[in-house]
Length: 85
Image (cartoon, rainbow, N blue to C red; front, side, top):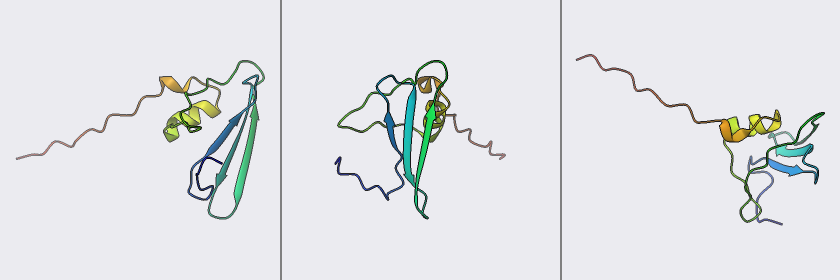
């Protein structure tokens, strides 16, 4: 439907209208995995969707799945090792 390959490793995430339930579908190299989660209190903070696609890092996706505000997840800075000369 969106021109995406379901076997490419992308995670397909669907939200219910009330934003208290999500389903995630992903290929894990052995089969399709379907995960469903319903929050007892609160709602999932939903990312902006462009052309039917939302782009999140794996850390942001994990935060979304936990019912946290994924927008607060920032990439960790990569520290370069000091070079002794």
